[in-house]
Length: 554
Ligand SMILES: Cc1ncc(C[n+]2csc(CCOP(=O)(O)OP(=O)(O)O)c2C)c(N)n1
Ligand SMILES: [Mg+2]
Image (tube, rainbow, N blue to C red; front, top):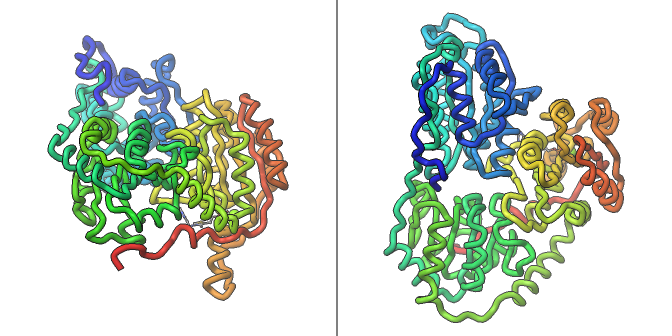
């Protein structure tokens, strides 16, 4: 994925501070925004941001989690590297859940972290925001981390971090810089993007994969987040093989939901039980390995940017290592020579989806709200999921038409990620509307970022499903723990008055029809944020459709 300016020589050295060198390097890599929260250790970074404000906008948040989630949302919505900057110690720790989520979601997020004076790091003197072994904590959260120790290193260290974020399996990186190092200057050449070495595609493995897939009677494709940039290729392969494509959460939108071969849980499980060859693209296959099971009759062909992933549970029949897009392109070229003729499966899939859809009607309160949202959200609009009842149903049945338009928090499934992540997505994609759904529990994690949305005029629409509870927990306590309710009932503000007090547009919708009407208004208004409160009761459990029994290898 070498960019156009890859390998471009650094610009002529000019006197810059380390902070200016970092900021100029971000701009030279095409970043146009930094999500941030200021403080003493980073004052000179902000001084540099002021100087370069024509090239890099600073969007400041009300909590470091907000800044980091916004960078995450921007990265997920654009597929491009994004950055945030916070002070060390508490500032860094406040951002840590978002950094963890970026790691779990393979999202290219760069954390710029302050530090105490360089000479005192590790001495335990009790400097402002000092934390023991910050680098050690960072190392547990990201694969690439470094400390900028002198201005001459600043630009290259930034370019190396940005390259690491896009090399192999993408992911976050972190750079620490001490309070006194930010301001040191030198003649510094600003480093452009460094070339990214793509792994060589194994031609023999491509042929083996093409033969296996070509001979398959009931092939199937499973997509994860690593397939998001290979939608055209997955679509072509699905048609060539007549293979249904399963995408759940991170893999949704790779194959357009309107394609009859596009399936989600739980039909995906039935198909997994029947398949003889599975092409797994950029997915950990956790549900498949740990819930649905495998046996010797199933040949798995795995495409993954992370070599270690291939060996994690069970070595696949064919392991293809690298970015999905070029690998699938090679497979598409190789397949016709080996591909058997198969009967079209569209009608069969339509019928089987309809049957599952009937059973999913159990979730009709959630489904009715989702239908209202889908009816108003344009085809390229972005839906941001949360750990809430309507979100669980969305993962199963919300139609997704394009890649990167369904943002779901991956295996962290961390409550409270959604609102601030959606703000970042909307900020980075002002050209399309973004709708965040959230429970009353999840919304309050970062609701203070409404102030950020107002100040920076971010036209996000947020729908708060208010059941006065950590509803998911409450239902589990009711159903499994004899109704011994503890820690699951919530006192909430009047969400409409709350949002209005920030200056946001706010409304209440009591029914799916009303939600649809109100959404039409808020999606048309691009002047600032809107909040729609939807009062709801307890909702039916989705878990029977999500945690399903073994279907293979009994
Ligand atoms: C960071 C984090 N903390 C706790 C949880 C556990 N948890 C899962 S769902 C949930 C309640 C969600 O409440 P709300 O946002 O109101 O959604 P509802 O279930 O009521 O629709 C909790 C506490 C979690 N997933 N992530
Ligand atoms: Mg709730």
